[in-house]
Length: 179
Image (cartoon, rainbow, N blue to C red; front, side, top):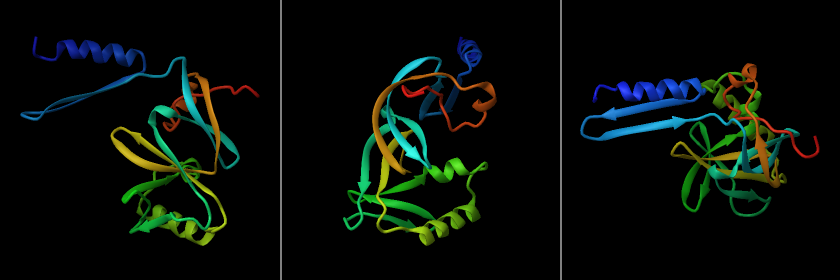
């Protein structure tokens, strides 16, 4: 009908399934729609990584490549103003350290970012191997630093319990083969 009635029905039904629909329209430029549906029960190929002794599964659909930084070889994480970056084939890649994200209960702000950078510079171990997962999600590309890469597995993803769903950084949970 041209008045958005049909899209309202679509949006209502998507929200009943605990999904979301975002519509962004600009006259003369077009309309973009982002539809997000929850994982109810899916088998997803993932890269299993370790961070602070815990295992996490990173979906391979967002993974472009994995970079291993060996001590003494070319390539290292650098600082650009108040952010960490990695120079990958001549382009700067913003870095996110998964351990830092998991350790914080609030989003990073200017002061916490500077504090975190200073801590990483003070704790820098030139003999430690680093792993950077190059991920692309939502049109943005970044490097996720993890402690170790354990391999790939196809896992059954189950939805998060409603009390944990509010955390927002986890898509689901699974029980690994070893319990």
